[in-house]
Image 1: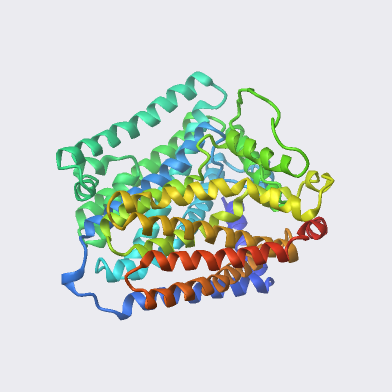
Image 2 (image 1 turned 30 degrees about the horizontal axis):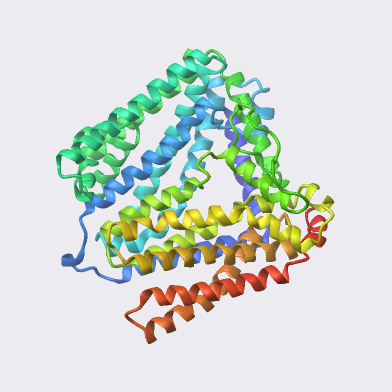
Length: 519
């Protein structure tokens, strides 16, 4: 155990030294801290009036939904390749050392707990929402963050347990999936039944999510139960939630350390897969999220020649990797749009801003960015500008479909007119074009730079600055024509298209420099 303690303290010390020796990372951290401080300040300076506060049950239901999503998304990895709590460096040091298995397992769990808390850091930026809309102190966010970390941590533990018990056995995998999805289906059925019997409204759904039976929902139920008890200063649910959490942690720990005599082989494969994925991302060669067993159907592109072959290649790859052809994040945003326009009708501009902000973080994941690291695009005997346009064409239909899905609820539920919803859809699509242009600009000058933190900072700064002209045009149009909201989005879209065309034209020769930048 002394060796494990030495390893923990040494890793912490080396991480601190590495952090200090990289000024860009330090600047980025200070920037994040400043934003966090501003968020806390904005949430504490104003005193909300009781008459305008919303029902806190809404907040606790959203917390329950968030915990359920992260727990489910993490735990289901146990049926695929596991969720290792170790890195390859840990494997090389600990798995070969004369250290007890329990000590190694404790080290992995402790390390994973820290990572789980780090993943939920974004929660701390919701201070103004928690304070001004629900009347809770800013300190409540730290409790929500701990609950988020607990949900992710339990998801990682369950994924490791599932992988250990079902590894390389198809019959056990099928049985495990039946139990795993069956439990979720039972509780979702109870939730929908209670909602239906109460009137099938958003309010009934919110209160159905806080029924006592939902506190037994695996992990997310009793963790959100404990968070609600601490936030409301109710000692009973807080203690019950913590006790159940501790009991489940102990049970999973017992399974990993006792039932399986040697868990090294079970986590080694998952660790190797995770390490390969991280290495590939660093080299700009991220692997596809394809299933292990793929049914071979029609082969070949079927269409395209020259530069256009790249477009059809990306369409085929999109279809094979995701049959829905829609980014899962966009589906989540569509659901969020539905809930938001029901809860805060009349505040569509805030929903539009949130949609655009979320899209700015996902639009750069397109296949065109990966193509720069492969040699095939450079071998096509076409002009660089034509090849660049062919690279971008495949993502445009997906971007348009995502924009439509995100704003269908507004018109369907009567939160705004059809013309305004259509104008917002077009405006979101043009913002996607603008962000693609910003990514092209970074690719032109930085390529696949090793200074990832610096590149991310520059991207968000450029995206913010280049979004200001269209925002200014929209504000001026709104002042001149206050009763025609759709007109503001139309002028915003025109400005975005002009800026995006300018950026794409300025980066028309990006392929001439990309091979050098990506070395």
